[in-house]
Length: 275
Image 1: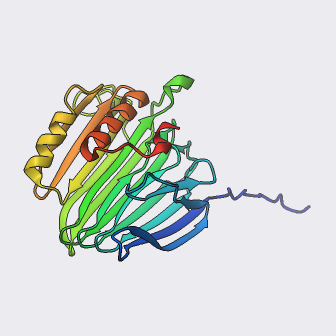
Image 2: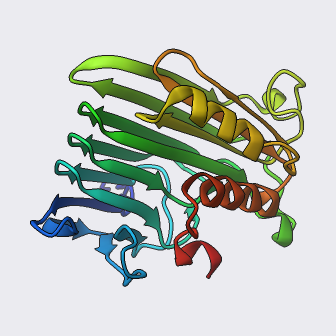
Image 3: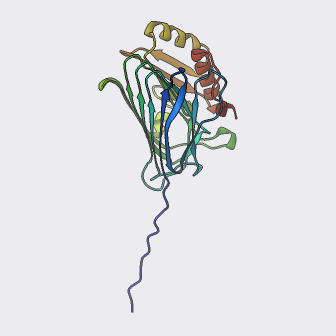
């Protein structure tokens, strides 16, 4: 008799990569210089109000990510240009049956340019495993506002997250000199309710500001976070400002983030945040 044959199924994985570069033209306006997209990652540039900074919107055509998926993005701003990058919707990170879902982002911000990295929060499902990395290189005179946010499950759907894994890595450099580094990991269910960790919060965010007048920006940001739905704080460790937010749910976090961004920049959030 023939020996039984064991067939191991190979699960399909999703990959996406993209690159967008902008430059400032002779009239002082920011123009698209290069655009590349591959796999499940798409980039769209919607119309914005006259004289407003251009926006780029990230779209994951796969509708979510899970273990083994990978997305890579490069963003380059030429001297004096400005670009806001956001996402079409909250990214859904589903339960993993092996490995991490990985997102890596590289931002290059030229001299006197302004970069606003503003993706909508990632929704982490129970059993998910997600790793994201943000590497930023800024030149002298450049300004940066970068945000990463997460939500544990969808409260409106009655979802309850008891275990998930999130690894978040930040590196911000100016002319190859490290300005700020952070390693964040959430992989212990006890941390979800520990007073020294999440303390029962189900939505959270980190934002970093660099290149602005530190005293004025710190005072402005602390005024903006006063009286939020959750807990928030802003500090100045060196040459950057770092803020942390904890909120009871996604709605509270989104409302607080809109208040933060609109108050700091005196302009509306990208329209996809309210769709």
